[in-house]
Length: 490
Image (cartoon, rainbow, N blue to C red; front, top):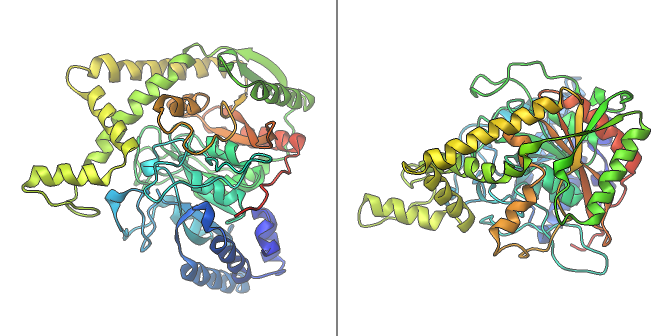
């Protein structure tokens, strides 16, 4: 394979600027890498001709001295983002061969800055899942394998295709979304960096909705600085999204490498979960030591309502999903299964169009919103959500950021939790609180487990304080010196 695919996003952009290679050469190298990695099932749609056209246009802009911030950088796009003229399905049968005639705000920002689209990336159907096994296109295979173990492992979910593609060098970076950990958990499972920015930092316009008060777009990249470069392009106010924040987008990359001396870092005592593997605990302690060595003060904090986060999340998210997914009825676009009458057409279309996990969440959501149970479940979950947010507010009166594990384990085997939804949902134990409170959270690869699989540490920040996370993430990255890469088997 070409060495061009091994470059970081920043190094590739520098190479393009110095004319060491062209955008066309860089894009061709990635197209060949994608072509040779079918076994991973990371891409559900490849767009090589479109990519080459975009690369040629990029080279022409650079020749005229008009290059944008990402000009010529080949990226992968999660299939949740609508892309004009390119099939966008949220990896669900119910959307069929839907081709939007509009561009999502986030991808439009990337193309504005000159990025190149390699194709659409696999994901859990409608972003509902923690293992990328609910996709209508089949599961993504994690490029990482345990030492002496050929068991196919999950790349995490729902942004499994994004994480696997970045880890396997099939793109320089990827878009992803995070509703309860769907950027950070896959990043931890694949040795990549993922950041979920503050709710409202990136526009949700043109992103297929799962749970509207929780969904947030963000990047998955090979290192902290690359993630910062991508987030700067992805973020920005958008009047079409009523939840989009009208705030300035800082130069996130300028925070990487800044001193963190004097910052107070909180360690939430409630995140020491029962049965947590000792290696996760050791890595957490190692992260504390690294930040101490960089001049941070470590403070134990309490987030007392953490234990209610998962139950609250799995009421709020399905409730919003059942409402959002009511629009898929086979009438205007996507799959249509004709029945004897209108009601039967609706029923058969939805029964055949949605996968099992999506049906499960729609049923849960419809139940908790129903007349007799709205107060007992949905209203109570929203009150718990407020308490969780208040916990963070109190913690941030004492500290500048929090450090926790990203996930309770390394990547597990495909099928391992398939018959146990609760075990699958527990993968989100450290991540859902961040979505419920609308905070920024980042996962940084910090070590490997006994079998050589990557593990991540999570940083949680104040609203709109992604800059501090990039500074702290840079310190952990520098201290961890995480250089491991998956051994090529595909």
